[in-house]
Amino acid sequence: MTIGILGGGQLGRMLALAGYPLGMNFRAMDTSPEAVTSHLSDFHHSDFSNEDDLLRFASGVDVVTFEFENVPVEAVRLLEERKPVRPGSRALEVAQDRLEEKRFFRSIDIPTADFRAVDSEEDLRRAVKELGYPAVLKTRRFGYDGKGQALLSGEEDITAAWKQLGGNPLILEEFISFDREFSVIAARSPSGAFVSYPLAENMHRHGILNRTICPSPHANDALGASARESIHRAMWELDYVGVLAIEFFAADGSLIANEMAPRVHNSGHWSIDGALTSQFENHLRAIANLPLGDTAPRSYSVMDNIIGTIPDVRSALAIPRARVHLYGKTPLPGRKLGHITSIAPDAETALNTADEIRRRCGMPKLG
Ligand code: AMP
View 1 (cartoon, rainbow, N blue to C red):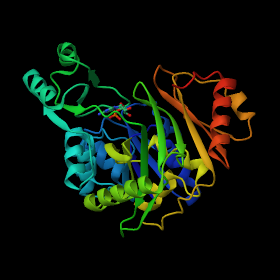
View 2: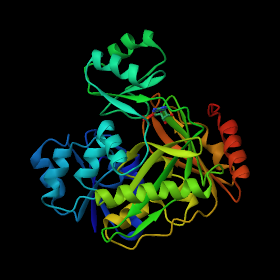
View 3: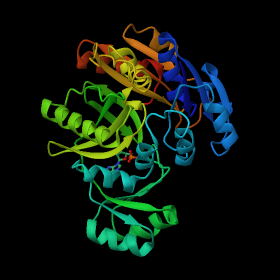
């Protein structure tokens, strides 16, 4: 079976790594000739807008998926006329626009921060009056890893925020003073079979995920069940096939959805080493209509992203509980270059191991 992946970054690469043992082959398309899935696939270099390129890409693949959410919806629609595309254009369309995403969550009773659409400076002034300070102004589209966001702490910030982001369709969100951030990842197959991973706890810095702990030592059964019910509802509503992730803020003991990713997700990378079936394998199983794999954790996992520069990986490899993954990308500030997962039978040992790895490898301190 040949899987076509739109996007050729590390997520595509890890999908391919998970799929080869299942006898799958991969074709990937990306706008960059250096995309790292190219090392592991029949690689097509294109900007997704050329119909001939898309048709050539689709010919001979059994199913198409995507590994980043800024793939043009039109490209996915074109491919959908010819091949199964999983998940499909509807999920992609909703996830590409923070306003549509929040409306979608609310339409299926998943709580979100209060929000307003902002298309002019006047809208912004009205919206902050209604939501109060602090508030977060975000671009509706193409924002990721905290890019395209401005925090408004008072009236004096309005002009600068508008200067920074004005001209794009925007959303103003109430600032959530959260205790922790969690995410849930689930997979659904075409027949509706559903599995979910335990609640993961995430630590961000400057909007970029730095660390995931899974299962979260701070999640209780009620939070886990609430996340699971939410993602099940979202998948059902979208007739979703594949892996979906939803990120939440936890405040006052309940979950508030921030965003969803219609793909495998950074907060699920722990599952390669820490779960019976990784998120990558379950995504492939789901889109290939194969039975889904057990999501049970083998251990506690702490996953730390390698960001910007490659640390002294040799030191990490000398630690028995460390699993190192490098993506083959050229180092650049803020770029995700790999991750290291520390696995242990209890959360405390996994956390201590992860901290020791950071120290020994010379990775920057968290927090
Ligand atoms: P996002 O790009 O929406 O995932 O935001 C990146 C990070 O910014 C989140 O993980 C939070 O740490 C923070 N953030 C985003 N939106 C809000 C909000 N409405 N209230 C508080 N923090 C936020």
